[in-house]
Length: 323
Image (tube, rainbow, N blue to C red; front, side, top):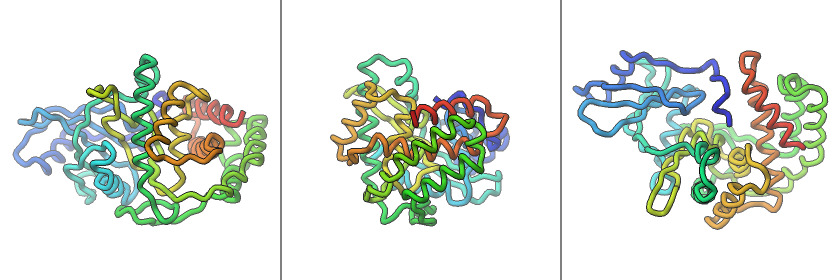
């Protein structure tokens, strides 16, 4: 998975003294005991915070996104509360007075990353985890919008967009011919991608589904799992900064990006998604690959020489997608 990727230029580091000042703004009279960087969040900064007099830690999240991103994440958490396991917000500061970013203090959620279960878990654990994740994704997708688009801080559609057959092929062609994707792929792989898109692009015109809340980074690095009386289940879905209104297949493709077709995880994940009310087109496999190809090319377009691990992984994923 992408945990081996190099961090982007927006890697955020806040010194201890500044964090202490930030925390004093939330808990007046309380002293910061410890601030430890977490392993999640490739683009944003996240810290596990210990506060004087509190046995429970908190999560400090520094938003690397533009205006409204932090507000959007808070609004999503409030909308999903009680339906999807998300961290509750304690405080949000969008003034940018103390630091140059928006930041928030959230409830700390215990658990292990889904990635660790997918990579090292027993078959029984993997199957149970997949079922819980499929159920949670169906709940996320039960939240719908009137049209596709990027979300404002109040979850209205700020910038509507369409990704039909023509828009899809235009983006892929631009990535292959005029952006970095074609360069990093090389001539042979570039033509493989082009041929795949020509053969499958019509599928995007044939589907007519309502736009849903798309997490857009729904994978093993953004989902926490915890043992419960019912077995292992999702304890929190993290990092909603890239979420938007769109097609459900974006999240399906992202989650199954590293899975072999008909894998144990895929079978239990898809069944649970459908059993929990998640609709899937009969061509969901191809649609998920097309949607994920957009994301993979976008990521490769924004890759540089300083990111060899990321480039190598993305190149392999794109080739696997179209083979």
